[in-house]
Length: 355
Image (cartoon, rainbow, N blue to C red):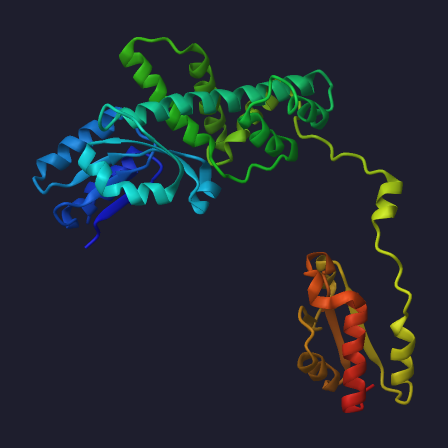
């Protein structure tokens, strides 16, 4: 019963499968449905798809609507959306397209025109990522501190949005995919084929395309697209990864919290002094520390009920994982994390006569 179907998959093969594959969507769509195609595909694919849908004779409408902005902006509904299609198709899908986008651009020329604009965008995006990788590898080869180079270029004319967004991945050697090398193998491949059909030479983007192909061939296809820098690192023997900035000792000392004036341990020891039973309680702020403890329960929450249960066990021995760095400040109030836990202990001692 869907009135609008949105397709946002990686490539033409997947789009074809969604629409015409086994149990494809087209066979089940009611007459008059609108399809919004938001994948990055060739203009020719969009034009052919429109003809196939018209051949169904069920008034299924197609909107060519590629997007730019990445995963985060897609989740926020703040994508840049480029659309083309018939007036009727755009009218039927207008509210949905507006909800998806922060910037919505209408391109004249019918289906395929919007994908042509997206090709221009992907040419620039791929070239900018590849040139950012090349520049940082060059800087590393010059024996420059790469983090310092990045900081300077951010405020110089050589800066681009892709440079600012992708170089931090290179500096951290973190290629968790937000986009992927293989995406630009595909997108710049579309650009290359279209330029050949139109007989227009695209020298720079062709070189960038081959860099991404090299990265994919080396096994980095599913890495973040910034991993194209690894091609340069392999060829030149340099490492773009930057050393973390040195911390100033005085700044670090000034940033430490003030020493707590209260020492709750004295009261705690006094409260338990009337009994000779041994109690071992470990407060640890390092999550890795718990890995060395065997057969001892580790508490990540410390309500009175949970602590009471532990104190009633014999022998009494448990591990509290405080991990205060991830704590929300208002969870422990002004008294501080350890003070908060000790006060819970004192309450249990008094209420249940425990030691």
